[in-house]
Length: 405
Image 1 (cartoon, rainbow, N blue to C red):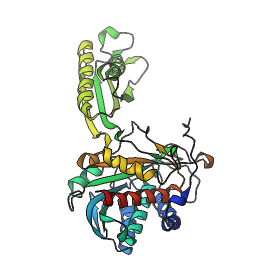
Image 2 (image 1 turned 180 degrees about the vertical axis):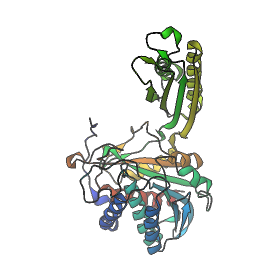
Image 3 (image 1 turned 90 degrees about the horizontal axis):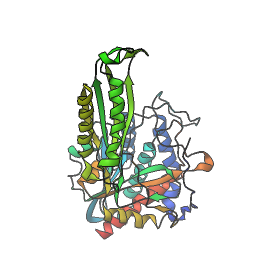
Image 4 (image 1 turned 30 degrees about the vertical axis):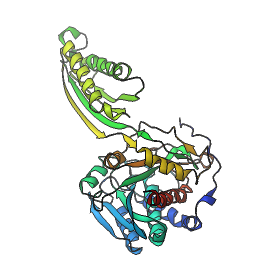
């Protein structure tokens, strides 16, 4: 069942400057070209080549090959000022597209099912506009085209390559096209926006045997089932009620026959939370529970637990910058959605740990056109009108950031 998105406010594009509206056809063309040739994380060679060719044609200096396929473009304004980063992720997902559209993916089993093709098109539109209007802003803009957001993550290796240091970046912004919000809305809030993502795999080792003789065994299924149930007490009994968190076991595999007690059970899952103070705490408690149940039942275990991404936490001043720009672009109050948190994760979090910044959602769903399937769905698509809206929002952030800093 597809979750319904909120009712969309009316969309008035008069707040989008004429030159950016005139760019809409090219924005759509760029987006669709990228959509037809999706590439997985750290394999975005064709996407990066296309981006590089556009930047070269516009005379915009840029570095390529950062963290395999990443690109950073630099555009200087008319006067010295602060350095603002704008981040766009490039990678697709291992999903077979089911949309019957002319720009459908031409690669079997790979699809832009999360809007990253739109992110790249918007960032290219920003580059195109700013390179022709340097007189309109102070400071420097660094456009970051990042690989592998869907995993294992390209933000951290790009940071390790020094992209925040030359010149030192003062702040960073980014957006995610969001089908949980309708076209004409902006989801922006101070503080935690998206959750930390931690993962685990656990194997329980028991003692197999005949299903009719359980006294001769250590039933790994029973032990595993107790673990699955007990892990749900972490959130309900170990986490402060005002701190949202999730512990999910997504896989459980055991057994080979109905009359055989399995000697091993394997499970894996994910942990999500907003509060950075919980880093490490849920993982520690998870292992305590597993160890205690296994000891009590005569089983042993092997646990692999790792952090994928920290939480996405917005700087209050940068969130206010985005909000103040958005109120001039979309209809208010319906167009601004402060209650927009999600337990989804994003490696934009690494950038926000390093410099002040804001990540925000740009509503892209249009239910009247059937463009409201959720992210990572094989029929995901969005209303492309959002592309020029995204360019306008970023450009206004650049102009206002240079004036206020």
